[in-house]
Length: 223
Image 1 (cartoon, one colour):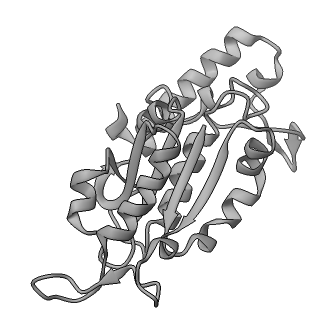
Image 2 (image 1 turned 30 degrees about the vertical axis):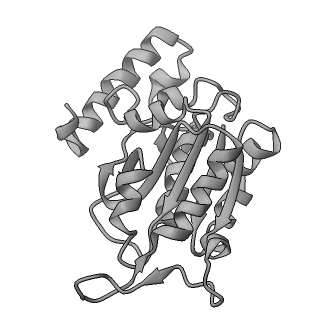
């Protein structure tokens, strides 16, 4: 998978991709992530990429020209399966969406900033508009990092245990059951006996029961 991220402040994003699973995925050659500074595509001597909105109002809007130049340059080098725009009014990211997007090969992620982008960008280039929740951030960079993390961990070979992602919350429509590790008894707080029994069918039955119980308690809307 190749991910190209377009941003006004790309340095804001580098840290999440330089650690942990996302770094290991890149080091292993399973994923490549490339950052593109939108200001590099400005025709203005001051590297301006934003302007006042037509019709007046507060805030600034990212202009279409530098975005068009950047996307055109990327598309000249390869075909892209999706051009994703991170925006509060997009479809809310969920596990099903992450599963589908993780199967793609080449993705462009455009980070909004200020009051967003010129609507013509959305009309002409964007194939997916995604939000990570009903709230507003200063820009789409952190949202893009969340999106990329949710995709990269699903790429085959990225996680040490191939079945790990399949047992995460939401994969089967339920929250994940409780998990425990050593010691089995910590200051009188014991791990459920079934988990140390070695009886795999009983363990799986317990996990399914607990997952359903936790979902009913915490997220009944999922049922």
